[in-house]
Image (cartoon, rainbow, N blue to C red; front, side, top):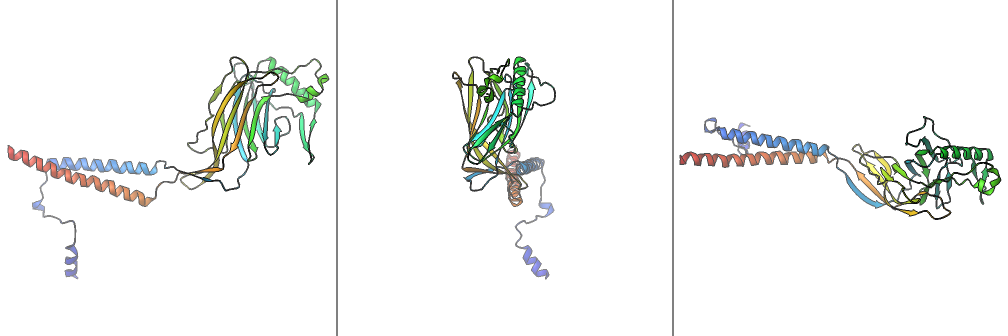
Length: 340
């Protein structure tokens, strides 16, 4: 057994010299400290790189049947009163909902603003529900509540006379088809059909569609997500303008470090503004269409084995360079000593 162990020790690649054959020098200690410092720095760098975000993005055809699309909005209109502001959702499947027609899929809140842009009170403004759309199967009928319509008209006159603005925020559930978010001023079709109901009242004429988009997104937010229209500001200083935004919405699956998935959407945008044509009212239109491509973002870090391999490589390389540097320094020191 002892003989076998001696034979086994003969294949050791790390031969240990006798203590009296080892020479310790000051320059060798300096090189060793530098090597340890280098190995430590590289080790910490690899650990930070391992825990840092590693995002891998890939794209593929969207084959999944996904749920309805959620639109999140947070927009301020400094020159359009809440009572005057109209919000409609239209799509190619025939859906038509607005904030005055008992829309079940619109969860939108309106906060009144004064002429300086400060919020008036804490209570939100509730648009009188003067219209109700009834689907008979063959056609859609609109039922009008005259009392609610008159209350809406009074609110419009009062807020317009005080030059109020409106802060709109909330969510809307829409179908996964091409559609349009239409923000404009209420037309009050009932008073156009029955002008005798106006009496001494009048429909305010609001032409300034200046707006500040604090947030416009589709679905939940994930870390690092960027929405192109967030923080977007447009101010009308001259002739009245209507604004149009064309969005291409891309389904996105985000996987965090724990493997949990967040299904959301990103988008790209193209915009333009056009002068208001005679007989039309100013509007802000957001046209959206879904892409057939799904983007997958994976945030999972590299494997632990990958980390071990990289640490062995950098630390081992640091000590190898240190040993080689020590030999060069020792040779140079001996050369200088012999010269003297």
